[in-house]
Image (tube, rainbow, N blue to C red):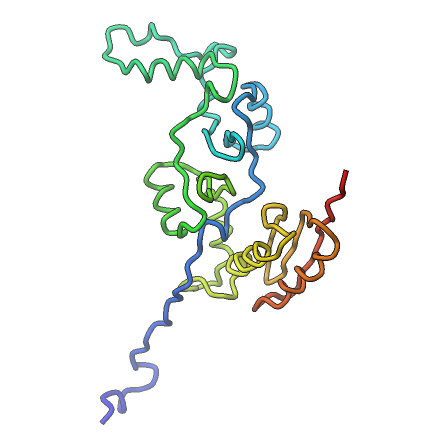
Length: 249
């Protein structure tokens, strides 16, 4: 006999919906059009960039590899402002000489290489969103460079995580294949598989299943086939292709 047979339907214990086993990765939600500077970029140029773009930090990259990061905090103590680090303020204290030298460099250095933070915390593009969140919280930071091997491919920030959260349906117990960030992942994988197209030459955005492609392709011949390949991805509603053909010089 069913032990629940005499129990009213609204009182019977109901199993919670099964949690999805899909995993959101750093590459699913990261910002790919990353603003970077070179090691030789001037401090004034960096300050101007931070101010103009309304951002709080930039990645320092050398030939595509991350070598450091410069944040607003790195530029707070500057001789130009009269806020520079003064060694005399540490008289009588036990100090770390290397830390003192680094502080003096940030106060007086004139290029990114002089003032940047070198011990950069980054994640690989396949890192799970859970690991990204743990890393941000453990190190009390707001953003993480995302790499493929040693090469910079994006940045994931707290703002990116908030956007991913707003994409979740109310009461969602986990990501599903219909979610925009999971569709974006499949679009990126599709572009990687087609010669002459590249997600690194294309900004991919997905909203309510509508895919927008902004960037470039190597020639006209591959634009339509690559668009059609994206259109048949499950749960893609529409593809809006704004990619231009790279013009030879």
